[in-house]
Length: 82
Image 1 (tube, rainbow, N blue to C red):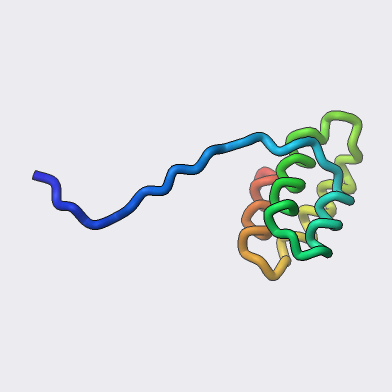
Image 2: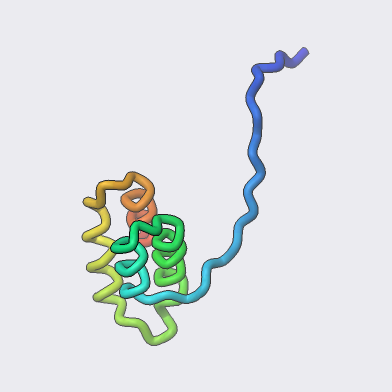
């Protein structure tokens, strides 16, 4: 009934990244550590209510919409809620 299309599925485990601030994102990007930068982007967006400067965070994610890496651009869009 169903045809095997040869598609393999990968299973990923989600983890909530630790709280982060915009400086953590910038530092990771400056070092070329994309994985850490992406985690820091999510961590800064999720935990911004913990006394962070939302305007600074918003400006960072707006700037990252023009980043060379498509993952950073896509995640910046998500973090902005667009």
